[in-house]
Amino acid sequence: MKKYLEASPESGKKFYMDYLNKGKIIMLNLLKFHLEADYTDFDELKPKSKISGEEAYELYMENTLPELKNIGSKIIYYGKSTNFLIGPAYEKWDAILLVEHESIEKFMTFSQSKVYLNNVGHRMAGLADSRLLPTTEIHNN
Image 1 (cartoon, rainbow, N blue to C red):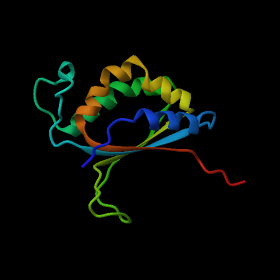
Image 2 (cartoon, rainbow, N blue to C red; image 1 turned 90 degrees about the vertical axis):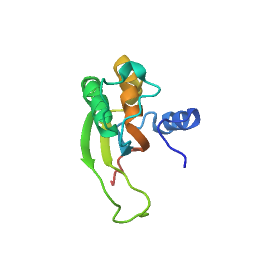
Image 3 (spheres, one colour; image 1 turned 60 degrees about the horizontal axis):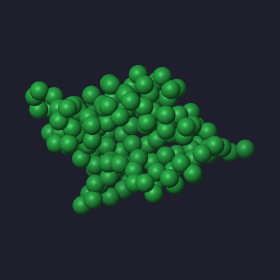
Image 4 (tube, helix red, strand yellow; image 1 turned 45 degrees about the vertical axis):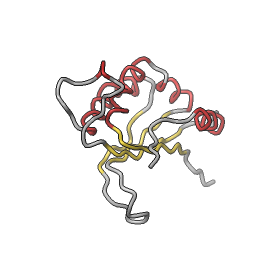
């Protein structure tokens, strides 16, 4: 089964074009953690003892949150998840994260920052699978 941990060049370009000059975006993250973090490709970040995927993701969050706040973005919600009330029973996610960015430019600033790039290995080691859905608010006038 295919895992989704990073944007493809095509989806990244489409995302940028679709959300350029749209203002605030909310990123919906669906997260599935490894039972044990997999630091195979991130030896330089590997903790001295084994940790769970969720603990690795927490390291990513702790290390990048100051940078996220520095550019004016914020976490709206981060919580645990179990089964869908409406949705396929086979699809399960461990956590949901909602992050608000003032603009796509702010999101890109964060995703290209040294702080993010130096810590994204914790995210990758922690996640077994993920989804990232950008959204904009619907305005009813």
